[in-house]
Every structure is written in C-alpha cells, then in structure tokens.
Image 1 (cartoon, helix red, strand yellow):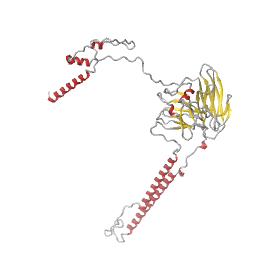
Image 2 (cartoon, helix red, strand yellow):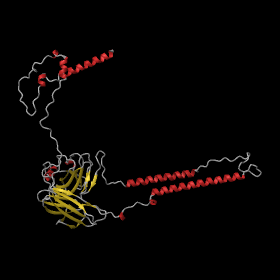
Image 3 (cartoon, helix red, strand yellow):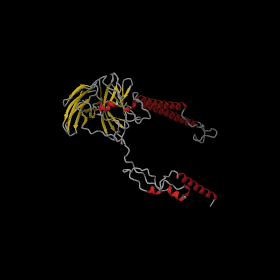
Image 4 (cartoon, one colour):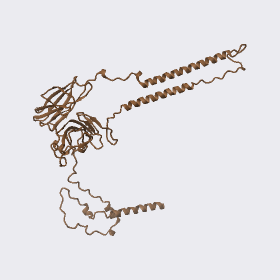
Length: 473
C-alpha cells in the first residue's frame, strides 16, 4: 500500500474518532434499558416522582467503556417524540354568509335606456326589503313599475326606491325607463336590495345600457391619397421613375451618336467597309455609362425626406395618443391601475371591486373616532356599498388601511374599522382572508371632515397592488 494512502486512511480514522468523542457528552444519561422502554402516551401523562433514575445515578467511568460500546450507543436510534395534543391554530379563509335575497339587473334593447330588475327571496320565510337603484348623473325617469318612487340622492344623481314584501322562494320583477340621451353614451345603473330599515345590503347588481352603434356614425380612415406617408412615397417613386427614364434616354442617344460616327468615319475607297475600320483610324474608347451625380444626389434627398416625414408623422400620432390624465403606476406594483365610475366592475391583480353607492351623513354626526377619542367638529361618516370578488385560485387577505377615500385637495382617509364593524353587525370583514372565488357585498365606512363628500375611492388587495380608483358622481 502506498504511503500516501496509509496516511489518508489513518487521518480518516482519527477524524472519525474525534467526531464520536464530540458526540458522547450530548448523549442522554439514561441507561439503554430505560431508553428502550416504551414511552407513555401524550394523552395520559403520569406524575413524576423524586426517586433517582435507575442505572443513571452510578454511571460507569468513561475510560472503562470499549470503543465498540460507544459506537453502538451513538448509532442506537431513539424513538420519535409524541405529536402535540392540539394542532396550532390557523386562519381559515372567510366565506360569504348565505344570501337571503339576490338581485339581477339586465338592460333591454330599446332606443331609450330601460332596465329590468329581478329580486328573489331564496329563504324559507317572507322578508321585507328596500330596493334602491342609482341612476346615472343628469338622467331622469320616464316610467317606473312596481310602485317605485324617484327621489334626489344628492348632487346631480337620482335614485329609485321600492319597498317590497317578498314571499318565501318568490321572484319580483321591477323596471325603470329613462329619458333618451346623447347617442353613444353608456349609462350604468347599479341596484341594491337592503334590509327593511335600509342599512345593511343583501345583494347588489349592475348593468350598463349602450345604444346601438349607427353605421353612418362610424369614423372611417382617410383615403390613401390623403395620407402624408402615401403622398411622400408616391412623390419619391415618381422622381425615381423620371430619373430612370432620363438616364435611359441619354444612354440610347449616346449609342446612336456613336453608331453614326462609326458609319461615316471610314471614308470612301475603303475595301473593308464601315464595320471594320482601318488600323490607321482606331475605334474610339467606349466608357461605361453611369447615372449623373445630380440624379444620385436628388434620389438620395427624396428618399431621406420620405423617411424623415414618415417617422415624424408616426411619432406625432403616438404622442397625441398618450393619455395625460392617466395616473402613472410604479414599476414595483402588480398590475396596472384601473379607473372607473360608480357601478362598473373594476379588476386588479387579486380582487374585482364594484362600488354600488355612496351616502354621507350630515356634518357633525360622526360620533367617536376609531381610537375612542373625540370626533372632528364637522366630521361625518360616509358609507360605501362595495362588492368584492376574489378572482384568484387561492384565499387572499385584504386590509382596512389600504382602502381610502380621497377628499378635495388631495387629502385621504382610511376605513373607519370600528364604524365598519358596526355596520356589518359586529363582524370584522378584514380579520380573515377571502376564500377563492367568493363574493361579498358589504358596507365600508369612512369618517371625513368638512362639507365636501369624497371625490374618489381607492381600493386594493395588497400593498404592492396597483388597485382601482372609482370616481364619485
């Protein structure tokens, strides 16, 4: 055996022995007999006694043990410990409470806006409900079915209200018709069914009426001969063709002049004819015809002008198409920010938000603040009825601090957690994550100061989500 191999094997044995000696102090001091005994179950613990453990009080000296016994003790497997009696608590995803009343809204194909509302009681007992339909700003009703009333809701908006008593497992159909509006203007009318006192929503739905597009009103593109790139390209082609024709004419003319000179240059009396000139009169040197310099320079200028004109026209169209009113989003956010109006479903990275209505109380009726302190003098509470749908395949948490109401001047306030919990009958809607594919309709309360209502709501699922922004009428 080579010396190097013997040295390596000896070093390996030495290192192995050092590892065994380092592990011996960490071994339990119980005897092998006590270690091999079965442990009692975790569910029936036995009281401990003060008696000294057997065979562990008088340990044998370390020097008297053989290396084989130490290795056997090190490699002896220990039984696994008993699992805990109780599993650690986990946050279960929140599921939407069972709905007692459902709402469905659809539009009708008519020249003027018309909406059909179906309110269904899916419970086993009759219920009293209040149905409210938020009309688009500036619109007025021409017909209301089912005994509804049209009342102003503040500002330029109007709402239609019905008070219904729904028998068990029944469906009631309502309808509204609005005055004709400008063609091409979409009208969204969200509708919600509330409890009899009109405070807690059962369900909400929305529909957008769109007038049929008239073929004559379609915007057509300009004809090809009126487009600047086409005109420039046509001019460039025309100049090139003209230059090519001039060059071909000049070349043919030069050939004719050369042929005429050769036919008359031999003189009379030549016995070889005019095809073969005499050696004394050598034939003229023929140069290769090339396009003139002015033609090349002109063609290059025309092509360059066409390229520059096309690039400038394309850049001008792209710059004019930029939306300067759109708010920029950070590159660290997920998704792109979406803006919309009341009653329009807006989707972000995890949730689909729909704001159905917003109502604000009188100034000075805010009550106590969320921390228990005094509310602002002119403070009031604004309640937004919001529909939230989890569009992902996993449960998603959301937080009250990320839901904001923006006031005039750029100021904003977050959700009032205590007032929102009270509006939801003591249930904390932000405590548990939303289950995958579920939808909830709930009120969110914001405590604001001043007389101006919020101008915009910003809703998002997470800190890095771009979120949605809903403009208030």
